Length: 224
Length: 224
Image 1 (cartoon, rainbow over the protein chains, first blue to last red):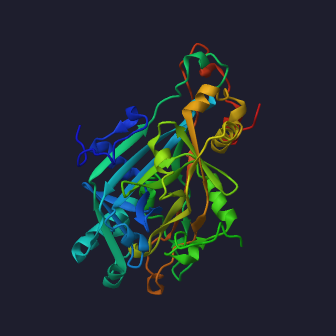
Image 2 (image 1 turned 90 degrees about the vertical axis):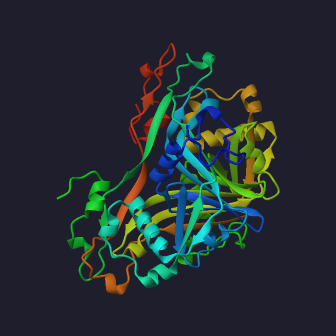
Image 3 (image 1 turned 90 degrees about the horizontal axis):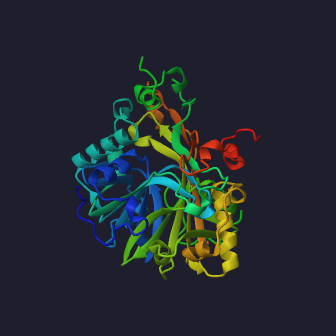
């Protein structure tokens, strides 16, 4: 089992350690499946948690936003950042209220973000972003121009420590509760895509265009 | 428009202020719809972000967990906590890569959590928790006993400051991009419940019991 930059006191899973995972493959897969994450940083001595889009390349997480985004500046402070991605997989209904729980996969990564200033690296990172959110979309939409690149701040965070937690089991009831006439089991949950809504504005309305390959693939439909 | 304990520097939305909401109804509705949240706190000077289940009553958020849960202890430190709930509503595909974004609703609340020690209040709070996650479930499953209450720590956080962000619009492209032959629009996303999986263990297997009313209601099915 590989560990991600070593497991330190920040990344050790303290509760329910049997659900803990420290291998790169599990941690990376959670960040890759998650469409967004939550970034934690310290401002004026207190914690702040903001949802944002991320991308992962190797052991580095990337973030982007407007040049004036205060989050991107705050997360590069010396206190570092904590980035958490959570995938909610369902409710676990036990025979007793006490044993009810959730099935979920979460990854928690710690590091010290820094701004990416090289224009070539920025452009590459922004391409990865789009491909993470919707594979294939970079070749469909207009690429960023110099002005847009200049308006965008990109931040990278090498993962110094990380851990994951994977809860995927059935309900675990007390032995004395097993014969109670109470339904127990799992109600699975997943993120589902709905029917796309074409933008109705513009002279050449998107309404008249077929769904692009990126969206067809996302929805599991066959390409023309 | 009511504000939630006033808007201070911590809760002011800095990016895309037109999407900002500071009214109680919007903030409360996001926390109520979210099945889980992310709690941020400061440990050893650095930020930590952990997913957890919450419940809201009035202007107070509640959290619970094992008596030994380090998160519950850490979040009651003087630095306070930041609690963020995010509902992902879809991808917004624009004609240019630069204008791609997400539709989401998020609520960010700040406060100073403290432990609930009164046994009656704890019991009431735990009942609310179950009803938040799955309305009706408290009357179906075995209620907590004294031992289980003793093993559970409950923490309350009065919301001192909060804000919400609601991004729900169509793509906004540059005027010069509006005639590009690029599909633009929204791909909606939502959390969907799957077919329940009954627990196959136990002498009187849950397999032989019908789905309970709480689950039937969750799935939008008619009660027997």
